[in-house]
Amino acid sequence: MTVASQPPRIRLAALAGAADADIDAVETALLLATLQRPRRSIEPHLAHLAALAAEVAEAGTAMAMGAEGRALALATVLADRHGFGGDDSESCGATLIDLLRDRHGTPEAVGLLWLAVARRAGWRAEALAFPVHLLVRVEDESGGRVIVDPFAGGAAFDAPAMRAQLKAVCGAAAELEPGHHASLGARQLLIRLENASKLSLLRAGQVEAALAVVEGVLLFAPDQASLWREAGMMHMRLDHMGEAVAALEQFVVRTGNPQARARTQALLAELKGRM
Image 1 (cartoon, rainbow, N blue to C red):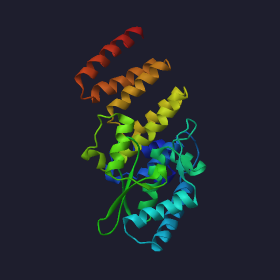
Image 2 (cartoon, rainbow, N blue to C red; image 1 turned 90 degrees about the vertical axis):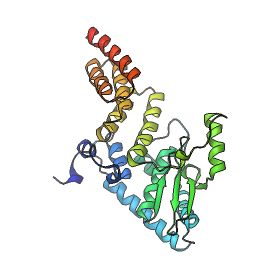
Image 3 (cartoon, helix red, strand yellow; image 1 turned 90 degrees about the horizontal axis):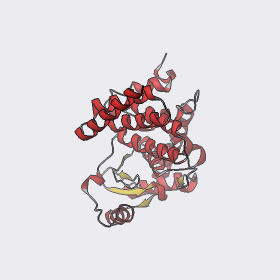
Image 4 (cartoon, rainbow, N blue to C red; image 1 turned 180 degrees about the vertical axis):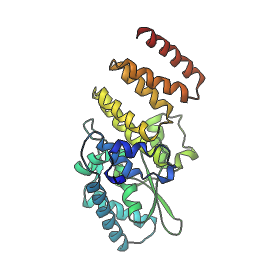
């Protein structure tokens, strides 16, 4: 059996020991989306992304090839020509497959689309660790850079705009930090994407589906202690006591927070007493 023909869960679990640089974020995002859609192949979606990247590369040849020109090519093809954009509604699907189908998605899904298409066009692009929503930095061959907001159709986003949005969302005391310009690794980018999906499902009261999202992430990021605790608490809500204990025990082993470990050990003792 080839890697491409293996079930998504096996392919995701195989990434648990992979270096972050060896993880293809967009392919992994598609695999995660197919966990909710059994027997769906990711190949048509990869072909769709490749076609979009070819359009972007072609558009880029007709424009100045500096960072601003590359950002304009992305906006022209993705936002203007194909209508990919952001959607704040509660009904908005958060997976990359939802976005490719409906043309609207969360900031994380739209940002990942821009990132994937830029890189498949052969350009350097990075997702930033800006906490409000996903921003993408596009770079040219000479090192010129521009930060854009894919959720807003590719609007340029300089430091004053980032600071203003940070304060608007996080409060007047919030300040822009150097880490907000740092590049997100593949795992952290995927965790942000799946967190948006999880929160949307929880707001809709779909705890079991939200749990499936968390457990999907744990396949390739088992060292994320907080996700084991989230999984345990959701299992408790669903009255899956054995699974709750197993997940919380993983949290106890993996957490570096002594207070959280002690509280969880007390909870585990209570759960085991009930069982």
